[in-house]
Length: 276
Image (cartoon, rainbow, N blue to C red; front, side, top):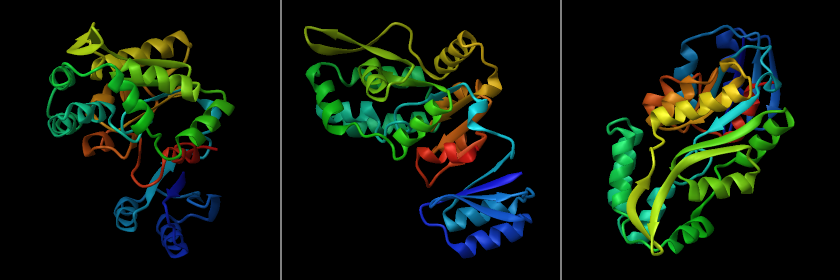
């Protein structure tokens, strides 16, 4: 196996200790924040060492290449974007604290997503639709490394998709901005230029995310192992189950426990550093 070590600051002493720990015979620099320890043996002690040193680690098959994959599916809020869009919308309505609390409970898996979304959306009743554009213009920020990751993936031939339990107002704009191939999300009900506090149609939650990814995967004629899925919350788990490789990005413990790999310190470009 190769052991991929990533971090915002990687000390040579840590690389030496880790190489010794896993009996690696060569240390190869990928970037200034990523190194490949070749011919490494799996050791449980690596997790504790990297947690203490604030490093991300992944044991990866040395033959794995980015071009082996055909599709990457990403959650939007707190994954592709560095914000929770519904929390920022709530701030315009003066109910951010209430909405953010429900968001966090949902991410931890304490509330079923569909019920959570209805509760949060109801708090937005009466908000001017124009406020959504203000949130997009003033508050939307991409997660670090997002554009670099997508550029590399597109160059390797992967299709790109954002699947969100949030709203199409944002996914449509993010899709256009980043030239993504697919986007799926929920829709606000609007009446007389104001949000009614209701969601239109069937809610795309945990199950819906998995179904959307499976549908697109099958349309593209891809096998499960040809898909990468990236998420951070409990409602991403079904989506991640439909992928051969799942990445927990700055994620809740329940997601990290079930993901193939976890990135807690570096940006989204850390995903492409895992593969040749």
